[in-house]
Image (cartoon, rainbow, N blue to C red):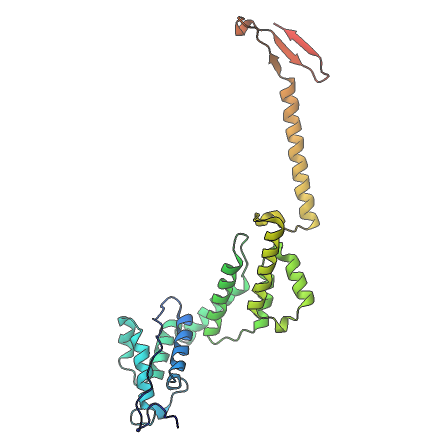
Length: 272
């Protein structure tokens, strides 16, 4: 029969998992990996749900001590100062969460800021797919960490709206041929990467702007601009052609050299 940690007849199970060091700038990532580590050592239940059975003198008190020790062991000294007076691992965990996410009012402001960034999300023309996908994931994790529900289909649709025009054909193909309700972000990013690889095979490593898809109005504007540039160039060429051309004879002084003018009809006139 397997003995549970904290039972009177058995020693505590060995803690072999290396706990992740506290990440001050990315609490969401740290909290998730720390939860996994505590779960692997079967002590996460002291944090969630916690309760009276983990208090001093209760059957699972040792699990609470193990979880609290693990949490404190990866904290910097300034954070430990906040945890010294806590009586349980659950209290310590909630304190760390409050220090990072703030109280309810502060949390609401932070959520609004993240949601605004999420709604205004756009992929840069020079941004790689991996960098953009990482930026999306960071925003999504931040929103979810504030207890805001965000469905996968909503993230997928937001991603499709945020990519630049060069991916218009990929977006159209996905929307027409794939059930977005079953599409995950990992699968979506993989499809875009496959498109990029196909473009590299076909065209090589090219500048993204070389394959931007334009609307009819945009294309007409580009053509008109090019025609205007050609006319300006022709005008300059005519002026250059009408300027006097000077011929020099060996031994002749430059000021005495005759001036030859090329007319547009092709005839030459000379004058001193």
